[in-house]
Length: 288
Image 1 (cartoon, rainbow, N blue to C red):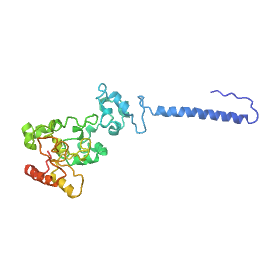
Image 2: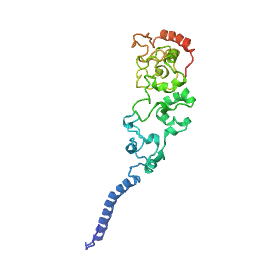
Image 3: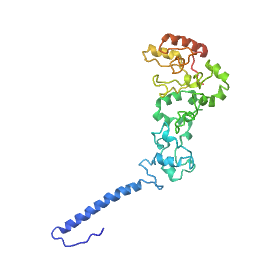
Image 4: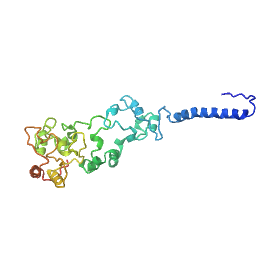
């Protein structure tokens, strides 16, 4: 803006300089925010923050199944409240390089096995601790993401209610036939129907008796004997925690009229079940 000098009388020069300083301040008030906004944009036009994060919308604009692997279901997934970069780290360099070959971004699936669980542990410490004690972890064979697709809405990659998830691996290892399953469970094989012989009903018990479907489940992958419930009752725990023979919703609770009913709060029932448990399984935890 041009400013022309003129005769202003006493104090005129001061007023002119003051006006010039005010104009400079006004210009800076306009220019500096615009400059800051410009500096917050990557070379690709993506807005970034101080951590070099570009945000979920930028990630999903490419991960649509056309330009990159499809993760379009992520906004309705169980992890929808998280940003992609909470697990994958800064995406700025990845985006600036066109995402070629999955470079310049963390892919947790490529983490070394002893460390792969650390991202999950940040939000799921209890389940991770249980998992680390399981045969899945100690055998260095099953990662969290082998069972869980963190980008999807479903809780597991395959259906667990019909045993598809577990039999995807264990059919070749231990249970190649329906007869083999029934010999192991001492129940008929109707996982998808009545729930009989459903792997998770015995091996992944609910940890919250009042919130069984949506609450956390045991990730140690071992059945709990009725004795664990008896010990809890003796210690004054109420309501009594479930075990692999009683207390789980839909399992020996009267919902299946052809199956006997057991009351997990009844010590006598648990004592009888413990005898049966030891007779069939030797009382030892089964981690298979």
